[in-house]
Figure (cartoon, rainbow, N blue to C red):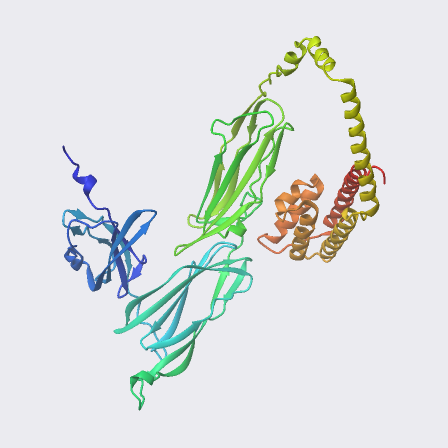
Length: 551
């Protein structure tokens, strides 16, 4: 019997706690395996490029569902000996070995001018320094300390007109500044400016309890306490010029990102369904460097009146990592055909601006063809045929065997029983209280809410306040059509009102501030509300007539 050596080899993974790193900053190299390798590791190949400061081994075992799992890790604290793109070499574990790994080591910064109190200070930086509106801005805070801190709190960045998300895990490492060793605490945020022009990020503040002396007590160290002093340090404020949307952008919804992907799945692989049966299409939009709340609606155009599309509420999710935010929007569409045939769903594309290459690109899903076949004919059951084939004489014969007196007694008993049940029914109806009918009261309350929402929308339109108008429009649309998505509200509107909603969106995200006129939107929204109320009243009256035909 022959065994493959590769099949018996332990799988040893290698990773670092962050990448890139700066020269004179320590970082961690982690080797991990789920089973014991052939032998102890030989870390000597690291000495050529890295200085190993510390190393430790840890082993963890667990027992889940009758199966034992083990994780063995070797963690090394190291510092690079030179700047550049360096290779963490292959490390041998006897006959087993890890793979190589690249890490980017940045050159040490020039001498930093620090204040008199250089034992504790904050440093902040941003990237890029000229972001586009609604694009991602990485904001990094570093705390440099060479004193012992017993307790500390750090404020968060609070820019105006911007969305702030904390990303990644906090990291700690050692560095050398001007020949002085420091411990560094690092935290990162993603900031999304919501308007072009000047963006100011105020200073963040650290409040710390710094240990000023060794503990002392006449009763010994058991009851001694540390002597501390409160220190407060601030970072510098940062001002940035946020660029507007580019003039030649072709989409209705501005989307600036590092990368964008459109993906789809179907509930039926061959896209063939029977008339009346649903098929579900799931469309996922992924964008690096964009918050999920900023992703556009995914609209599916309907090719025929024989196709009905019912969208679910979209799922919005942010995936947070040290590299930034990846926004995800997932939309499920239930498609139900009413006639047989082939139906071509048009292609879906999302224009976006690539912040890395400064170019306009498109994420694309090709057109899809759904084949709808007629329902198979249902065979009529043969039960009735079998009954008809039974001879009539059999039934007559059965009736003749029942005595006359027995028949009369049977009907007499049945009459008494039914009469008693009738009396009980009358008594129940006399005692039972009438049931309240809240349907009309509920309808009236809903109409009052819609009336108030329409008034708020008309007030914002009259004052030409675009932001307030959008907020009121979303509330108004939710009461009428049960959706808070602008694009979904537009689907229920006629062409004129849909155009005014689009003009409102363009005014909010235009390169330069424009004088938006909300008069037309106010009038069309009022007309749409009246049409909706007339349909709703007719529907309510029909339901009441059906439920209470005697009232």
